Image (cartoon, rainbow, N blue to C red; front, side, top):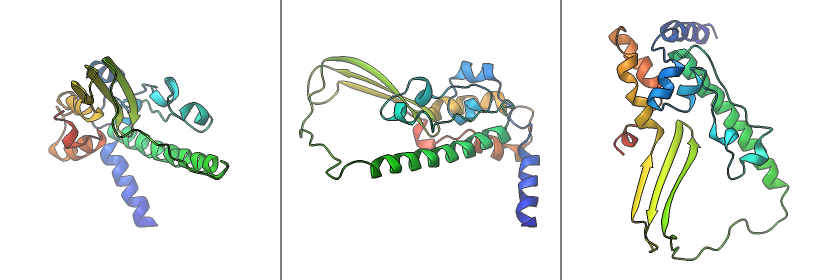
Length: 186
């Protein structure tokens, strides 16, 4: 136990005050998810514009925020978000157990025609907001589809966070922005 506490103390020492991201920078760069909430930006799409089953889970859904905006606050927000996710899973499992027996799936047609027009929708993902822009001419496939993941915006702020820090701090800064490399090139 002592080694775990010592490691935790060392982690806190190496991440506290490192890579501070202000709420203004969050807004300027479009940072979202736990990286934004660690800077005091209290926005979660699941609570603020609920969709799917989230209105029924409002009593379970909590938004974890911090004010410090540093690497430690970002990690704490992500850990808090994981705890909330487990609570949401428990609430969904309880709700499913109370449903009457029977199939839980719906039959869908093999081909879905997308109505003509354009649509933008967004969802709250584990790392932040994902946006989907769809343009259709009324055929079986969309004419245009653009996906905006949280990773692209979250990594854009690196130029603001890195100057003035040691090379050894880069690991903590990069890791605390919670991005997926494959998402950045969209």
